[in-house]
Length: 328
Ligand SMILES: Nc1ncnc2c1ncn2[C@@H]1O[C@H](COP(=O)(O)OP(=O)(O)OP(=O)(O)O)[C@@H](O)[C@H]1O
Ligand SMILES: [Mg+2]
Image 1 (cartoon, rainbow, N blue to C red):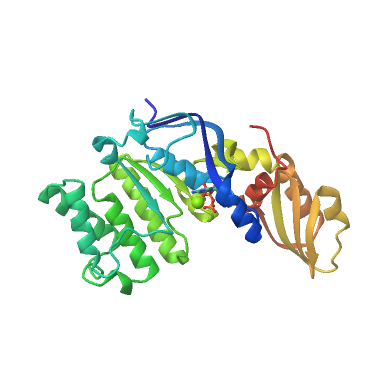
Image 2: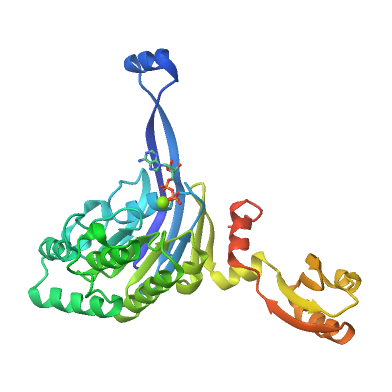
């Protein structure tokens, strides 16, 4: 059975619409006007137990709205959701004990107290036994190196330290489904890596299902084999990250340094030149011909150095967002 099943899910927000100026204010006193924002439009997908899926899309695409519906915080306008067999919006205690929602931009930690106080509060909320609480805390302390942080006031923690504690607070009850909304926002690369390692390890140890949004492609490449791409409330792509790269970018990137005399004549015949300056060249060549082109160039030109790279995932995602790609 899939851990998460979403069928024809939509969410429309009713927003109060006021015309500008005093007249607009007066008018809206008598007759309120509403406008509908269609945040999520008829999306469907399944996620299997233990999968880590990246949920990508530009600002305002509908990611947070979808996660909130999956976590039972928002009622869908239409469609069906099942998470571990539960209907999220019914908010059954056993559902709430099986999931967690972490939002990178919001914190649940009590600001003026040490993080331990929030952990104890969550222990009570989730009705954890002393033994389970201690075991979780020990496990996360070890993985995230929490010991130096436990007694500091939350307000005095750095952003990265706070994120470690946020994750701990959110996972103490060992949920099996994790909704992570930009868990690495604002963090430096070292801290991003620590969070990746932690999420991967938690997934491995506890077989947890993870749906994660991020604007950092590094998160997605590090953690997710599969991605869902959403734009303007609709799913544009659902599949493996590798397939996406092959399908959308049917080329590879050759980066090379030539010896004098520099000439781009030969390069022009094998692919599209992206950059050519002082003997340094970047050329996009058709994926299937990458090997033969490389051999030819090495044979016929004086090349000091050459590497073949996949196009960056960022570039590909931008291409999808811009609407150049729509096959779904
Ligand atoms: N409470 C709300 N009331 C009205 N409109 C809303 C509300 N929350 C979100 N929206 C609108 O719904 C759309 C989707 O928003 P959502 O927050 O789901 O996007 P997102 O993909 O999470 O974007 P981001 O990457 O910026 O976090 C946007 O147009 C947003 O303005
Ligand atoms: Mg969001």
